[in-house]
Amino acid sequence: MSNLQSQDRKKLLFIIDNLSTGGAQRQMVQLAVGLKHKGYEIEIFCYQEGDLLASPLYEEGIPVIWYEKKSRFSLDVFFAIRKLINQNHYDLVISFLTTPNFYAVLCGKFMGSPVPVIVSERRADLPGGPDRMEQFARSIYSFADHIVVNSHHQREDLSRKYPRLAEKITTIYNGFDLNKFSRPVNTHTNGNLDLLVVASVGPYKNGLCLVEALKIMRDDYGLKPKVDWIGQQVPVGVYGEYLQKMNQKIEEYNLQDQWNWMGQRTDVIDQMHSHDVLIHPSYVEGLPNVVCEALASSLPVIVSNTLDHPLLVQHNESGFLFDFQNPADLAEQIRQFNELDLNERKRMGECGRRYAEGNLASERFITEYEQLIEKVLQNP
Image: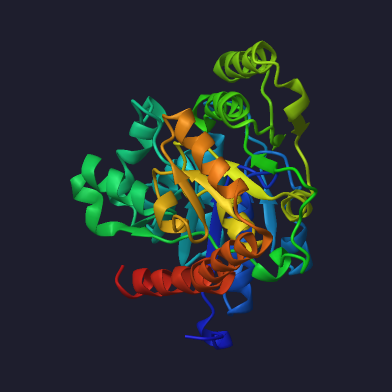
């Protein structure tokens, strides 16, 4: 199907918490705009403030329905969504993230006349997870018409934990406007290795592994690469404790002159173009947007050998894989990258770009969702 005829236009309701920041929000905005271009009528419901990412929707004339949730456990959101569904007669509901998924299934299937529902999870379960909220939400996923995840690892994990859901789970990789990520012709170099990390700071982002690897590189190889870390720092709870541990180790190992906390930034693409390689030690997530964006930017990556990472990054081709539990292995992979000349680094970046063009383009992402939507609508 290409563009829908006016009489066949399908009306879809998207549900998400807000449009402030986050990979799920960016992907939903892209999907909404892409489906609008294909002839669908789209509306988006948000129950929290935050429209930083909403500009493309406003430009395309896609209505965003803002509803302020009264409290964390308030039931008012259910009635607001159900009222919308009853009044506007949507053909299908799509939701991203656990709590919006819960709202979508309950409102779409149990509160009034049923409507087809597609829910989407966007990350992997934490060790020992899922938590109670996720377990509660998943207890009603069987009533959804389909479940989308953005990694094969999470599809396999969900299918193992919930065998009765396996036949209705599909992996759809995130999509990106690849034109925004083209790398300049001149490969960056300043005579020293510049490492880039783009991640929030927390236990599962595994920053301590990189700190330990820096010490090993200095002590064993005589190398002193510089790290620029972009991402949110939460000063409280387990995230604050982990940040404190990282800073303590950086100071203990006397690595302050090699480490730069950059905080949250909006110029991530430019930063990718001014660094030699992306380091991604994380071992818990869905599909890592930053790794995909690095590949699209022709930036080589050094990434943990878990989750879907070995599918994204071909070892010794578009980057290097390392054991996320072994800082010495990370140090060795960085050392090997350091020994590559500029032509080899350029070749590595070009290999990543080719992978992105074949697997991570926004057109593929939108088309796969469109095919799923039509399948669900034809087989309610």
